[in-house]
Length: 212
Image (cartoon, rainbow, N blue to C red; front, side):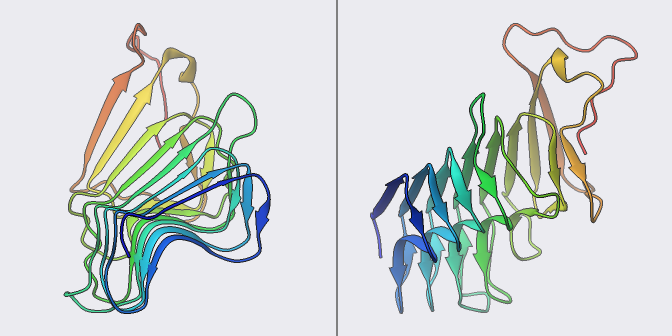
């Protein structure tokens, strides 16, 4: 299943939403975009029951979803790959998208390769305080990137990323980007990059912005 796009605006789906689905082959280069749609199940850019899932994406600007997965393979073992997939959650100045479950760039069965995935979070996103945000579902973090442009997010835990990118501004001083409610974030062996908004000033001595 490849080169498919599912674009939804408004309404609701009483189940899962997939850009591309394959029972036996790979799922690659598929897209799901959600604008004001409520999905009671999971949304995956591309999903394969027994093959790899790569270069798929889910983008959401409003509405709600349980679990957004960039790409998903149910397959197990090192020959199965959920790689180079992306989840993008973008909120505006009002009420943004609501996520009721977990956000995972690349979801795979036991032993599958889940590397090179991205999760992008910006603007107003409604998390429920228990969500997990992960680059991949399995332990290898190589190439998994979380990019964040926003603050005041409340989640359960964040992990399985090699790189964390934050865009900050002075209006964040004294505030927290991600409040972690369940398991502390382990940034050992990772890279944390921080930039300030265009035209913004860096912090002064004594100013504090808490990332996690």
